[in-house]
View 1 (cartoon, rainbow, N blue to C red):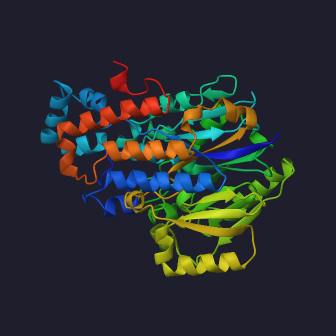
View 2: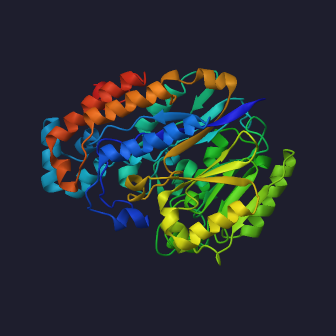
View 3: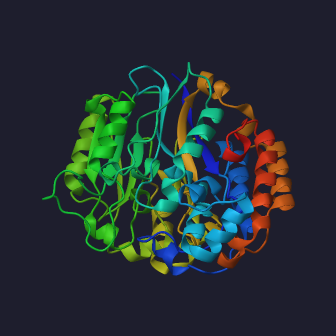
Length: 448
């Protein structure tokens, strides 16, 4: 059945700031306490969405979350009016307020794991919101994420929505950032690769020593069961512990796949040979051949991969069958990475084109092009069942840019999070956005 891959990017929220909340994410912690520009951040994301839509790729948008998260602050004992809750949190627990004000839902690669209808037992597209249990500021996301996804993919004949996994470290789930699907064609049965950092119930298993492993094998296995995947077409692979300790907090910082191509660093996996062999066997079972594209450490070190976010890129199929690699501007400024990309294009391999985007506001917080998007393979019928208001076109882009310009500040520091007016600004903006995107009442303040 004919199908295509659509990308749904997270719209950067009005409270985009640099609080340095994500231990293990070098860019996030390194830029902590700098002043951010929410308006520019949102416009940079929208510009990437529009550019890819103009190139003929299916591009959607996912709404940001309500921040500060007053409900979470109340759960933590802060009382009074909403403004009083924020003010008290600012006085007594500014780090907690910063966590409850994070715009991290913009990185929708962590929103959910998605399995297409060609792979699931019931022939529907399946979504499991990630519990993001490793970081408090992200662990509060999944209830709203689930509502936004349900409002975007609403038709139960086409789409199945699951609850997040139990909120325990044994089932730590970071969503599509540790998952990729390989196939000959988007509408044909494929192979799903789940990458994990540790085994929760095996104390003897080797894991990282410096930074936490955020994804467990047990979480990946649970999602595969929820989605009704054929075990013969699922591969579980361990991420290299040394890579995690070097700042590779998700697999999408060290590898990216599309169709039959896996673009990965030499040291991405704990056992690369076994991983590739398992993928090749599973791909053979669906009548496809794997095309691995390894980047040797001699050409690009893990440190340079993390600095440039070379692998946190989008690998997209062009109409001619070859592929486009979308990379952040930082790749230009890391000399070995830029030199490798020139050699890659000259090699006449599957990647025919590289496009560079300025995403500095997101990059300084630790998220590149791949972090900003959730991939969903859809048939024509499933595409028609998606909420039509979320697709990016000329009119939608213009309306969203105007919305950002009306409501977003051009400077936000950690101290500004205590401003009670910021909460009202965010709610006013999001209430208008739900009408623009026809989402209904997805936010707590709208739901009473």
